[in-house]
Length: 248
Ligand SMILES: C[S@@+](CC[C@H](N)C(=O)[O-])C[C@H]1O[C@@H](n2cnc3c(N)ncnc32)[C@H](O)[C@@H]1O
Image (tube, rainbow, N blue to C red):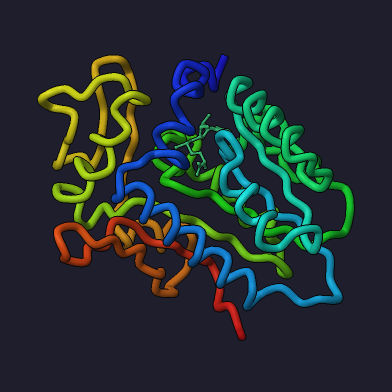
């Protein structure tokens, strides 16, 4: 079934992402959450109901971080095609005893995604940590249509992705510390022509240039850079994009 590829990687996911001791990964995800939560703080009005929908939520790390910051003032829903990722998210959720988060095994390219939500909360669809890069090319257009459809006029779409404009430098910085999850890094894993990380076990993650992602989102808004210091030099390893202007 679609999503099975990630079942094999799920047990190493938290070790390689939220609990990774490597400073590039830990600084990257801390910056990413800081930028996302600042955008939410600007957007959220106290008299309205919101649900954050994480498309390709993995083990739930982004929703747990947001719940830690915003508590019960928001609701949260994680959708992931891998049943193992969903099970790990649910185990974490029950340990934390959180009621206002739900997780569901779901293909986020399904054309009926809006039917999952029947209340009138404002929806904020998010897709984080280059998950867009593992959505198959033939489903990409539907994926963006789904994000837009969920956000409607009242929400907004948020996308966080690795920096394809600096693929040659940034990709080894990100994948080497995640080797136990991707399992293999080959001599030709960093494909600078295609802007893709891939290996002979079948893992493939596409990176995109800033202008490509703006075009997919139909947005000219400049993304917010995710900057990480490496050897005392700041490097933009990713960006957080939104599809509309967020007022203060
Ligand atoms: C790189 S991980 C990112 C997880 C999470 N967004 C994070 O930031 O930690 C990508 C996730 O997307 C999920 N995924 C890939 N294609 C999907 C699809 N079509 N529908 C739902 N989930 C999908 C995978 O199962 C995996 O958990």
